[in-house]
Image (cartoon, rainbow, N blue to C red; front, side):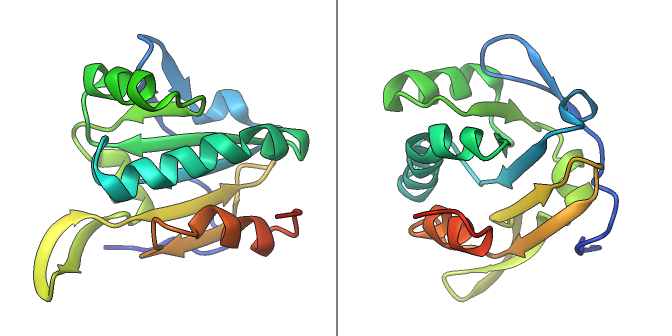
Length: 156
């Protein structure tokens, strides 16, 4: 598994979203994009993280950021997730995990002390030029958005 580093070209993607549309990274070029990968919609940690991004979305947009959350869940489940929790961020489905693999966000990880294969909770900031500015792997669901905001020099 290859991990991305600042300066690397961000792997492009074209994924279905919860609202029946698509999100294509190339269409967002010229703006800054926060792409984060999470294991499963409607689980406690993933819900906390998605709600934190939603709560920060207006401020992030004011600083020029778009947020895209990607999981292996089907668009139908993502739509339920959005509705249940009032999410306003873009939710995309990577059912075959190919985008996660391209970002190094899928592979071997420790879960409750055991090695398993799965989604590695990760966050990337893609700059206006399509290059990775920030690559964070194995992030914590709780408190991550506040830490990311600090890392980006944004007001908490």
